[in-house]
Amino acid sequence: MTQAQAARLMDGTALARRIVEDTARQAAALTGRTGTAPCLATVLVGEDPASVTYVRMKQNRCRKAGITSRHVALPATTTTDELVGTLRELSADPGVHGILLQHPVGDHIDERAAFEAIAPEKDVDGVTFASFATMSFGLPGFVSCTPGGIVRLLDEYGVDPAGKRAVVVGRSAILGKPVGMLLLARDATVTYCHSRTRDLSAAVREADIVVAAVGRPRLIRGQDIKPGAVVIDAGYNPGNVGDVDFDSAVERASLITPVPGGVGPMTIATLLEQTVTAAARQLGV
Image (cartoon, rainbow, N blue to C red):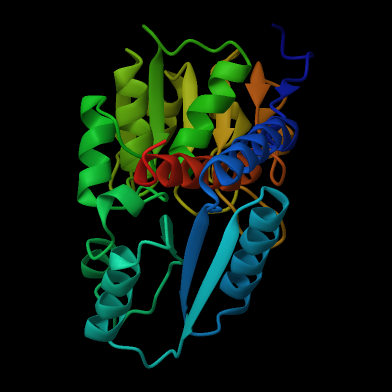
């Protein structure tokens, strides 16, 4: 590919639509067979506008996929112990098959303690220690939704990570770290970069696959993209801006995800798909 050729866009919206349609068929079959519809419980602490909108969007997608949605709204003053108690109650409720704790939850709450209160069999967002372990060792379990969606996108566009150099910019527990483990499981050579990485540009220039997941707008510049590389922008910043400078990167990459319409829809599709899988397992089907 020459610099004059623009990258092909990786359409997460179209792939996510197909996944949700298939998930809806599975949910309908499960409901017909057992008399029980899959149920996803969403838990929101406080009234952050972005989080409220995101949860509402997930509830709407649940309805379209034949999944029952149960929402638990907690005040911003909720303590760690109170949140943990709520999540344990949902974990013990046989009518709930999947649990999503919308984050962030507030600086005064121990988010990790809250995540670990979610039963692994209901951790459809893939945020617990147990889910990270099963992801890392290739065992049955649930993947973190955004990393899982990224791998599905790579598969859809025929990108085999085996033998390729993958650079993950970001090391969060539910995005950067797990996506690196999933790529490693596909035999990529994975390098993690972060805020203390020296000469980030040099690391990115060596990458066949770049995953930007750091939450800094336009951090990754086109001049640092290896010609022909695959660029996955998992960042989302105000103004519909990703972590990659799209206009310059699109001239050097072979494949690139847009923001919005790339990784975001895949995250929700993966969540819904895993909720139906969780329900089937818990109902013994």
